[in-house]
Length: 307
Picture 1 (cartoon, rainbow, N blue to C red):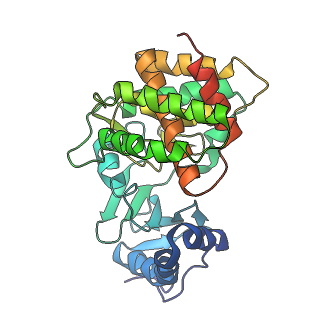
Picture 2 (picture 1 turned 135 degrees about the vertical axis):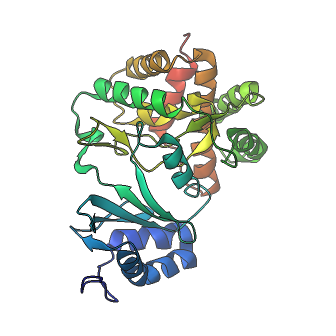
């Protein structure tokens, strides 16, 4: 029999999550937030879970520490399904805990997931040695990208072609000539590799706040936005993590270290990494946000890297 807390209102919605849902998803985001108390109560009862701590959240998801009926610690993740997140349970089942958090249960209708509980107080972003953090991400990526993507996963080839189709209009909206040339160079690099987009299972968003410590493994990946493609498309977040413009050779060191660990061809990896800058710039331009100088600087250093 469910415990008494499985009533109508069992949680307080973090206002930051409500604000981000309003910003990014509009009316659908507001409806998701309004439904969260009932949705949470439903899954606490359905999966016989007991709340075990304060709510956590990212930009899109509410994450609740829970305990299962057998005493196992877990987290309940509730999110508004979208194109990026719909492949998450498929990817997690494919990895089955090898380098990533384990999926314990999943409701396809709502996208709700029950996941093993990791140590949210120990993120890789807390590690002081940024170069060691880069190597940890590279080793995780070596595991995650070692398997082919399951059928039906989003495809990098489609994403790359869509970016190239959108680039001419975007370039006309960049006023600074040097930035416009840099974004055009990124598009040219993608054009060279777009015909061979790869078929590996990619995480896509493995930055150092998406890597948590665990009792069963030193570090595990969480929150994938999976797709099928070339592992070179995975490197950008680790280049961007805690970037310091004062260390001129750090971007090149990170890039070389990751391509070594993953065994990637550097020319192809550089092209796909510049593709990530193109992707980010297209989003900024289309949302009428200024291009981020930090990201442009990373791209300059990669573009000029002879390796």
